[in-house]
Image (tube, rainbow, N blue to C red; front, side, top):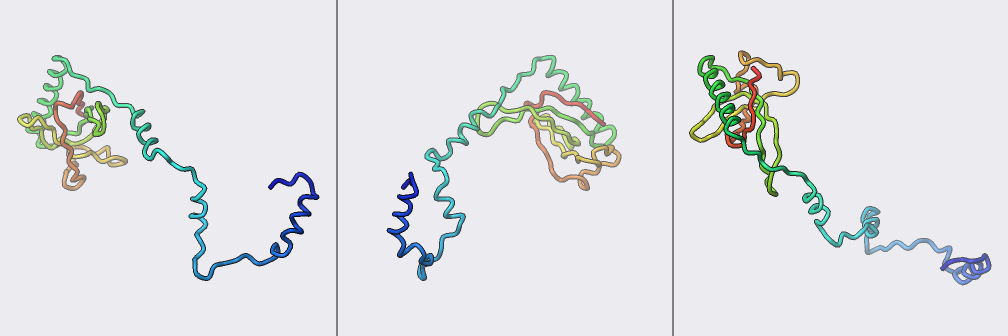
Length: 171
């Protein structure tokens, strides 16, 4: 009820004068609702549950996997061969940086990521490269002579050679 003038307000005051000064009623049998629950009654209603997430997922960018041409595949095979030869020669795990395609689990495509790690093994028969994840932070300047995989990281990363688009030996 809107009060257009003070006369209506005075009339309403007279009408409810007998109850207006009574104390607020508190039920003895029903507990009072917590303030957070009372506020939730007035929150907006989400009629389409999950719609916002679906829109966000649709807008998330994924790209297509690039197919390497013959020259790029040959260069990649040469670099992997050099890393394998160095591992046999020095018995050390070289630190490498690999650019590889990571397929998206929810929709077509994926993204290219850079992975840094020490090569544990190259399994050409299974077409897999196995790395120990390289430490980050101040320890990232570690040399192969100081690298003992058991002490630094037990986390192995297996990458399909078909997903690798570039590899660079760092140490």
